[in-house]
Image (cartoon, rainbow, N blue to C red; front, side):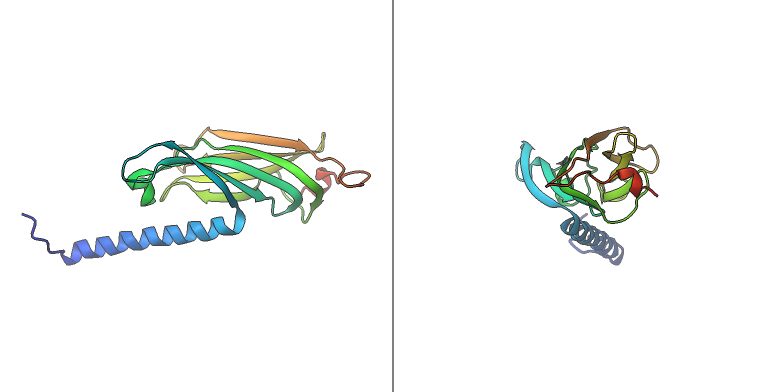
Length: 180
């Protein structure tokens, strides 16, 4: 029989879950606010009385390479579980990166170095954007993928562009000169 009383055990569980969800929301929003810009969201699945499923498009600059921007689209699950941050987001993420100004490397980087990362579920799934250099062709290559500690995820998307002279620059920098 339900009496309406909350026992100490259930109160402790409720406080723990609420605290974990609040911490997750604060960490995710603080990390996202510094590194990316939300450009727009488009509803793709209507849900009654709860937020719809959406595709969200974000833009971000490469923190190590001036003159390079990436845009990526990722699905956001709505409904009750999505609203509470407990839905496991799907791994269908696309990316496109371009040179929008003179390319200036700020520091050396390793092949496959991480540009950005974000949690895609409460505990297990993360999205990563990594960069690489094709030294033979002087092309920057970016890949987005999601991972899970146990089974991984084969879903990924790749974008590349050739580094071009910009604004009267005679020859662009060679990405191979900036590899560790």
